[in-house]
Image 1 (cartoon, rainbow, N blue to C red):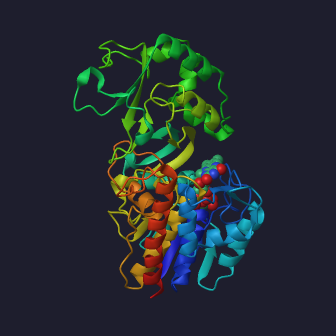
Image 2 (image 1 turned 90 degrees about the horizontal axis):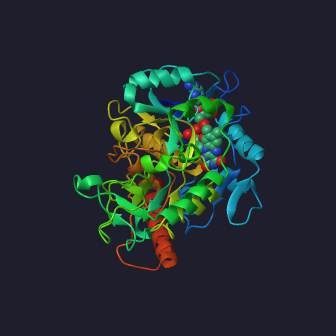
Image 3 (image 1 turned 60 degrees about the vertical axis):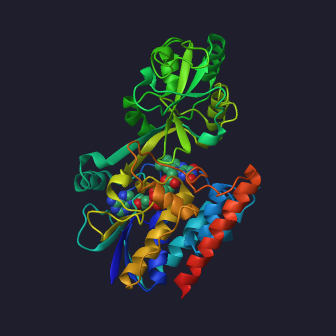
Amino acid sequence: MRVKVIGAGLAGSEATYQLVKQGIKVDLYEMRGVKNTEAHETTNFSELVCSNSLRSNDITNAVGLLKEELRELDSLIMKSADKNQIEAGTALAVDRNQFSLDITNYLKNHPLVTFHNEEVVTLDDSYTIIATGPLTSEEFSLYLKKYLNQDDLYFFDAVAPIVLESSIDKSKAYLKNRYDKGEASYYNCPLTEEEYDVFYQTLIEAEKVKPKDFERKVFEACVPIEDLAARGKETLLFGPLKPVGLEDPKTGQMPYAVVQLRPDDASKSLYNLVGFQTSLKFGEQKKIINLIPGLEKAEIMRYGVMHRNTYINSPKVLNSFYQLKSNPKVFFAGQITGVEGYVESTASGLLVGLNLGRLLNGKEMIKFSRKTALGALASYIAIPNSNFQPMNINFGIIDDLERRAKKAEKRELIAERSLSEIRKIKEKIND
Ligand SMILES: Cc1cc2nc3c(=O)[nH]c(=O)nc-3n(C[C@H](O)[C@H](O)[C@H](O)COP(=O)(O)OP(=O)(O)OC[C@H]3O[C@@H](n4cnc5c(N)ncnc54)[C@H](O)[C@@H]3O)c2cc1C
């Protein structure tokens, strides 16, 4: 049995490792060397395109927990990251060159891996993992767009920040739909004129992330909130902060301005700030969000970003094994599925490689529950979501504890619960 893995990035490399460990032969395709992306600089596998940090190592932080789960399940990417770690406090930062080189050398020299330095532009009848990432080549993107139906591929992110529902102050924010149409599902944060003035001033003075040259063109269609604000003080009051039809039930009055929050997941544990797509620096976003009445203590689960990012409408086309519903021989892994970040991309690669290997060896695929970070991500990309957008791992998508606990204790308990499930899965895998 052979598997075609397309893309030797973080997800593709991890998936390949998980397959060869199970005795499956892999044809690994990578185009860099014959065709480059706009962001990669080398031909090494698993190149880190930007930061050299894999974020927190602390298991009471969701990405720290995800990394620990990956270590438990013998991830190639985590082995190389831990081996090539450099000093960076509680974050796991790596020597990016050696990190990628170790992965490249291991996979290129593996007897079950055949490396093909070429761009893939179509699919055939092979068992296939598509892990071509956020910068999937243009020709293959267009092919996938047709293969999955026109609407199911996006080319850039314009994401508004997302906050944890439990951190919204309900003594100030109220549930209401504009003109009370339908069942109330939006939280509304009312601003007085004075509060709006401070918010507006802070917004127009805030520092932006500079888009890369290749990204400038794609943003023309989608205006970030800071650019709307720059058009004049009134613009937001007729746009995303429009108060009409949103009278505050406590006063019966229409506020001067209203920031609306829309549920972002089926369980309504996460809310996104409507119309707040932004390319402001993360620190500036936090400052501005915390100025909004009701969001003074909001926990930000995902910051707004605007960047080139190819991803499919996973909830429509994939199941929670990252497997194509319309063709069970095809799996997707990495950022192209709508998971976001180095570690998250690795996580999906591990899950796909592990399960496809099991499938080909006549074993049942393993379903990770939402009590684990791995399972929460897999479930996020598969649960129906009419507003599907890429997501980092965060505690908002991991199942809550069955009992109440203070935040720090709660996260420790969630981490313990998850790692105990992962260890059981590990025993099953090793059986
Ligand atoms: C500019 C930029 C900066 C980012 N910065 C960060 C960051 O700092 N921190 C973070 O956590 N995440 C970051 N990300 C997000 C994301 O986590 C990384 O892009 C990550 O590398 C995704 O892993 P992946 O395996 O899905 O894709 P990649 O690592 O990009 O791997 C995909 C591979 O597929 C190859 N490929 C593409 N098309 C084809 C084809 N048709 N045929 C053959 N090969 C092909 C590519 O050359 C590439 O090697 C960034 C993304 C971008 C675009």
